Image 1 (cartoon, rainbow, N blue to C red):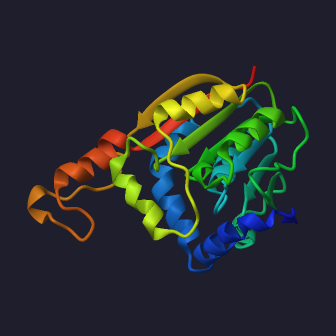
Image 2 (cartoon, rainbow, N blue to C red):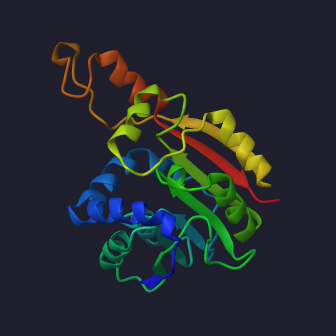
Length: 236
């Protein structure tokens, strides 16, 4: 793992997710996020040998999946948590998958050096998301794509309480705000849609209320209607 110094302001991110990595929650995130991530990932126009950056890589499952399909060349996973990056490294021995500890506001890559950037359930942890988008636009080659998936966003009312459970400040944008921010950073918005999670099992109505849900309708709305908000940006 190549360690890149991150600003002191991101120590809260490191502490939070180092703790998650230590108690195995990195694998838990992987299992939950894969339900919708795999559908978005299958759409990325990755050609043989292209370079991909996974921003907020967690357990590194995206990099492993891309290499296992045989399409991507080198894949980099960047995370703000050293423990997450160390765990991710231990889950693969593929020499073309590398992991870095770094800050979303200062991506350690040269201009026009990355073909595609992916981020799943991580972008909203950026301290300055507008600047992070500028950084993504800077490192993307012309025609490169940024696939950004989030479950924490304004329209998904069932996600709003997540901020209360975590010490890291999160950015909650609406779908329109994502489009506006992408464009302001110089990225064309090629696509935006909700990808439903059809794999989370929803109990029958008589099982409600549960520990987490008052009504079945709310759970159906959360997973089958809102799901993951995917915004796709393209570098001019």
